[in-house]
Amino acid sequence: MNTQSTLRSFPPAEDFITFVNSIDWKSVQNNIITAAAIVAAVVVVVGTKILNAIVKFWEVNGDDIKARAIRAVDYVYMSAAVTYNAGKFADERYYSFRDLVRVTV
Image (tube, rainbow, N blue to C red; front, side, top):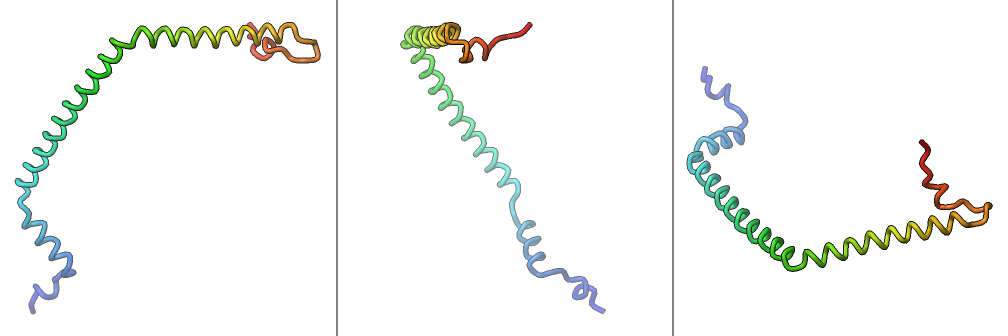
């Protein structure tokens, strides 16, 4: 009795196993390491360029950005104060803004 023919597996699976065994895995490993090193180098160079551009932008425009941010916060604060005071002096049949945000202790 020929055991080779009785234990034979599915032919595409055998072909796949043969294909996997024929691959030079050391070469694949070296290619992956080379690709990872190249990608890391590109990321470092591009990241450094972007970081330098951000630092330069902040050096040139930082004071203007801070002043505009402070002005925006002032506008929001003043708008809230105007709304609060307008609600504070409204007729009693209307709910005032201060009643909506009243904090109970």
